[in-house]
Image (cartoon, rainbow, N blue to C red):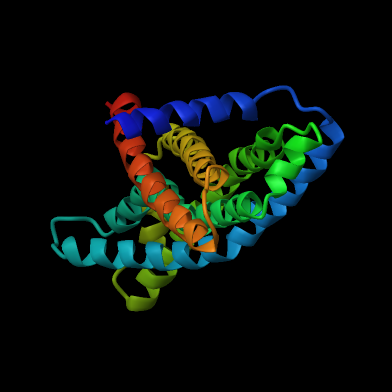
Length: 247
C-alpha cells in the first residue's frame, strides 16, 4: 500500500513538472510535430488492419447469432455499427496502442534515463519532464481521436465487406442497418473515451520510463509494467465513463 501511495504521489508530482510553462515554445512545437509522426502517423497501419478484421468478426458473429426469421437482417449492420462505435474502436484500439505506443515511450525515455541524457538536460537547466513528455501528451491527445474515427470507418467497411462477401447480409440491408436509429452522441462518447485513454497511455508509459533505475534490462521491465498498468487503467476508466455517460 505504501509503495502504491509513493508511486501515485510521484506520478502527480511528475505531471506538475510536465505541465509547467515551457521554456521555448518553438522547440516544443517542433517536438510535438515529430511526435505526431512517431506516435500518430506510424500507428495508422496497425489501426486499419485491426479495425478491418474487427469489423468482419463482429458482423459474422452477429449474423450467426441472429440467424432467425424473426430478426430483420438489417440488425446485423446496426449491431456492427454500435459495437464498433461504442466499444471496439475506442477501447480495443486503445489497448493495442498501449502496447505499441506505450512501450515505445517507456523504452525511449527509459533509455535516456539509464544513459544519463535526462541528467544532462537537467544540468543545462532544461525541464526534462516537460520537454520529453508534454509533446507526446499533446500529440496523442490531438491525434488519437482521428485514429478512432479511422477505426470506426474502416471497421464498418470491413464488416460490410465480410457480411456481403460471406452472403450473410445484403449490401442494402447492411447499409440500412448502419443508418437506422443512429445516435450522434455515440461518436462524442467514443471521442471522449479516446482522449482519456490517450492521456493514460502516454503519462503512465512516460512515468515508468522517467523513473527507471538500472540498465537496459530494467528498461524492458518498465515497458512491460507500463503496458500492463495502462491496460488495467483503460479498462477501469472505460467502466467509469460508460456508467457516467450512458447511464
